[in-house]
Length: 404
Image (cartoon, rainbow, N blue to C red; front, side):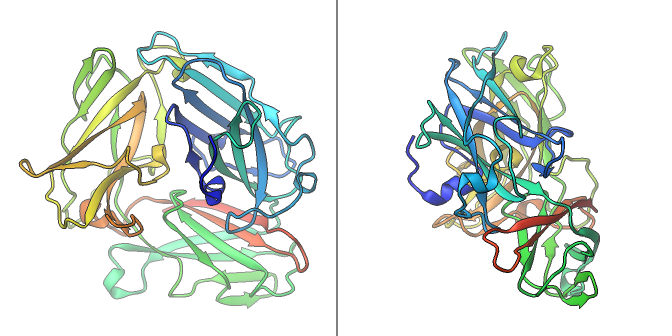
């Protein structure tokens, strides 16, 4: 499949409707951030399903990117210690499922693909050894731990936002990293729950000390706390769980969830969640990878439409929080409700509803439907980048994940 937009290569994308359930994480912990330390024994695990259920020759390569996820324009010899591409050889056919599929897995770095330098990378998976037939792109990070990050989260210093926003302060200790100009050579990026749509970049520290940078400006790194994610469980297609209303089995599986309501509570109420993640699980079989089946999961939100100029989407880590036709919900005027179905693999899923501007989807907002509270339990990821004077690429020299 030929890409129609170059920039898509450098974000998390799936370019084939037959490819489902793409996951990439550090193999030490399921659904962790895809961050590994340079020249360590850490590995990334990539997995995905092909619903065409036949064997294909899938190849992969990696490309180094700058801090803004554009190509670093380096030659592969500059960032690879090994070959330029490799073939994915681990695949398994589904077993005892209505939806037949082939499950592919890859562990890397390995003897064939091994990064030489730190920084941002994009993983590209393509068919038949043809780089123009890309089916998957995924971002990952290679770290050289030359700086340590100390973090804290406090309530917003602005009175109007104190009950709903979370303010992040970070101190960087960099004795191993001699900085010529800390105001131009380093960048700090902070993500909330690993979300590409919930991140902030700080170009310069508020305070510079000997071997230390302090990021505590009152006008930066302030995030809406949001609310705990909604969730549902369909590990079994035989038994109904708390959020499942009905399960239908015919030529395909259909799981109908109980209707959702807007979260209009004015006070925070704790609900354990996985910060937007999903986990493939199957209680009806032995192997989650190949015995978990697929089902059309039907969602309903009982809510009026505030304006004809907005659309409603359902997002989570399972779709990279991207707004697409697949996860756009339809409005039923006669019943004042939204509804839609998404084809998902058995497991546990976090999700939330967001409004988006109908004209360009650029303006999104989940607060009217989900609420926003300072007390919400979020995970944050802080990335510190450094470009040496005269260097051609951005290094990732510090990383820290922390929770409220």
